[in-house]
Length: 165
Image (cartoon, rainbow, N blue to C red; front, side):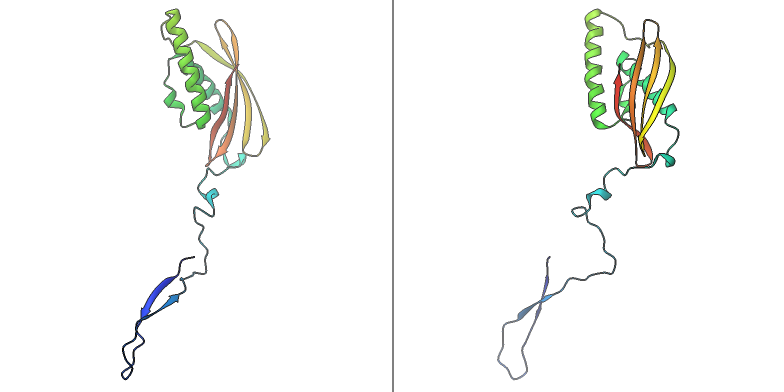
């Protein structure tokens, strides 16, 4: 704890001049304790949100599945998903985008919008503020499953895991 120092002259009318003495002044305290970033970093992290305070996760899961498949096909920019996915999910998808772009280039295949329809969406809630689900996606050649885990953070859903199977 830092102390504030003030100087007071201790000279009287008949006394010889004396050097000023320094006295410690206690810091000003208030009745309300304020958290600091060093003592309480959890106030500045993402705050968990209860499932009851969040919208239905199924439409978001279906849209994320659609967008992820379009990103991997090269028809959509990955940055459009950055708001809805966690940082590690973004990095994982970025690696997949690079690999799929290389594969398309090696085959000489053009970038095109994939044609598919969304099938069933199955969800479960393993904990409050967490929803896990699988979105079935039917394409021309095959049917795929997109597994998604959503976590309620800062009063909105955010994908903490996405896997295309």
